[in-house]
Length: 280
Image (cartoon, rainbow, N blue to C red; front, top):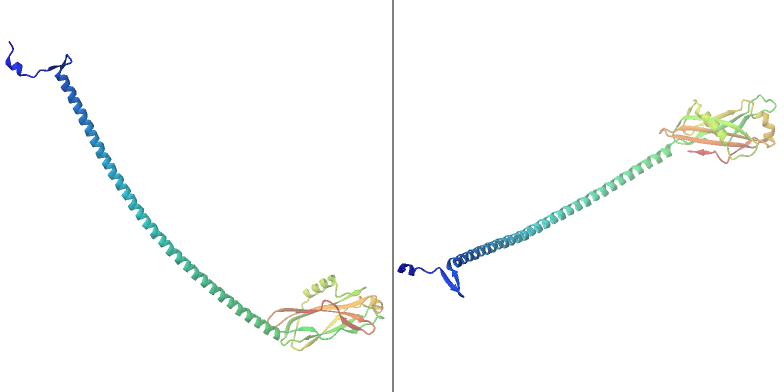
């Protein structure tokens, strides 16, 4: 006979559709299912917590971005305001510099104008008071004798200082030219010759205001006399030309050029040439 206590123990076997099923196997499966459900629930809870933290972090990031954007906007506004203030300041400074430059230029122009007017007045005063050396009268033949070919032909011309102050370092040179045709003035080769003669001249004088000086010229007897017959026949033409070079009392250089030709050989009358009669 079985022990009554054994009858009180729950049976580990039950039947389903006539098939015996162990209750211990069923309990194990239920336990594993419960554990799996618990793990799944814990996983889901963890995921929900993580998602919530992500949402919170995202929200905080969005808020921080908005705050940073606002701060950046304020900084940009402040920088723009500073730039505008600086730009306005530089613009005003540029306007001030430009105004000062214009004032300086106007002052410089005014000073230059005053200086120019003073210089002009000084030059006008010097020109008004300066020496002016020119020819007072036409050429005069002092000596000519075709019957004595060796006798030099001599002419004289009168200089005068018509200015108000002395002419200093006055040099005087002259020369003759004979041409087979009428010329307006001395030819270039003769001008070069007289310039060379002037450069080599050491003699110089001073001529006071209103004073005169006679410049004599001679051909040494070997240039004009042999051609005097042709000059009388007007197939050759005789010219006398030259230069006066001097300084005024302000040490400014001046020059007078002159040229005369024998217009009437029989009457020994000279006339001015068309060119080479200048004063400065």
